[in-house]
Image (cartoon, rainbow, N blue to C red; front, side, top):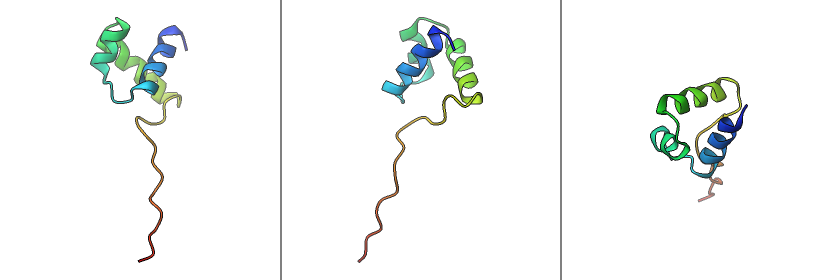
Length: 62
């Protein structure tokens, strides 16, 4: 991991729905670079999900 990977992780952790194009604009790198970096981070198990992890609702006894 390098500085760009760290910035990507920080950005997507803060705003998981930001999108690759907007991330590339904010980080001032090519969209393909962001996508390739994210793909590599997913393949290496660094990124395991893209949004809020919700627990199932408690079962209601009605």
